[in-house]
Image (cartoon, rainbow, N blue to C red; front, side, top):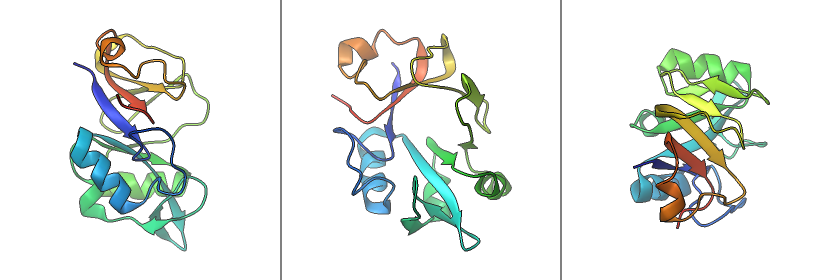
Length: 146
């Protein structure tokens, strides 16, 4: 079965007010067991946040299994690698490798590797249980889980 990964902590569609906030991320992790969070540098410290820093990163939180830390800048990537956190950085690459060897795919790219590929779905193409069962990938990162 493909692992659902809550994009920025979302489970029921995008919620920009709550995304990348610790309580929201923790609830999603407790619900589905996998998170993609955005991390950036602000004043020399790691912060959760896609465009703007939201809350300071709690290292113990991101070190749990199945936390995928999306570094939003190269300085945060370096700090995450120093922590040995599971992380990646990309722009519009077709795929990028995470620090633990997962193949993180750009939206609409479906690399068929059931052991390592993570597909991204922000158009709700794969939100049902039946469609999730048709995915030939380790994980699916999306805003919506049904």
